[in-house]
Length: 219
Length: 198
Image (tube, each protein chain N blue to C red):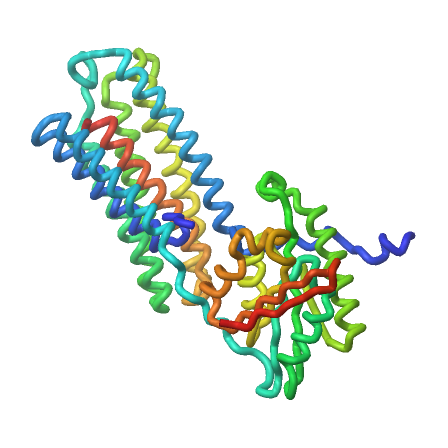
């Protein structure tokens, strides 16, 4: 998000740009005529809009989470909404942490409608996410996986970023429903996560109803 | 007492997310409200200007002290530079530089406000002298009020600076007034260019 007043240094830079912008318009209007002033105004405004559009479209640099924990630890971040109960996911966690002391952290995004999100009406979404998280943790613990977790941001990528800052994972496992039933796949969450985070990302497709699961290896 | 009540002491934990952190969101909401506030005054100003249809602006017999206001603009811009210097100084651990920068910023801001007050006293028209007078005093007065608020923030920052507050790591008390001060300067550039120059 572009915010010219995020810090004093950015605000100062914005002030200098504003001075240049209005000085150019005033000079053109006074030295030539008002139409020259309008032309400069339009040209500079257009240039500013193009700059803002380009800055928004620029891909952010890939983030490398800092490593935490002991050398013999395998820290796995699991991002799942309601599909963490799949047996294949549990197997995958075990397989990935074989020979290591596993540290599993489950994040359940508090999915919410855009209107409720912007109205800060998140209580219900977080309460439901907490219920799903508790159920997921219970299942994982019952399967012998020592897992902790928390409710994350409603936006899965943001939830991953927040969790990586706290947890510093060696890898991420994203659990989704099968294609056609998964909103996350439709929104390209897995692809976007691979672009954004410089850690191996495993995508586990869990079909809870059919108990049919497949695992796609990290790229 | 129920088990639920026993489990909760005080308000629930705040919802936290770095999608929009609280300081950024606060600043965005503040800027949005300021844009709407100044926007309404500018709308009134341009409405009066267009409806008036006078070949010259400001309309006869009004006259604006463009040169004095220009000097005042330079004073205000210089104060932004000293503000930036103050913050850069404390970031580098230069306490004397921060103190000098804040005192200079305060002095320059006060100079701007006093010059504007003197301009009002000698300008030759009042807010009730037609649409132009109302919008002129409305816009410049609104900005003056913002300068006053900025000077209040800077006064607190300066007092704290001389009492030994702020370090290279912790200087929000200078950063926030600095952001506000630059915002006030940006708004003055817009006001000065549209009201005095164009």
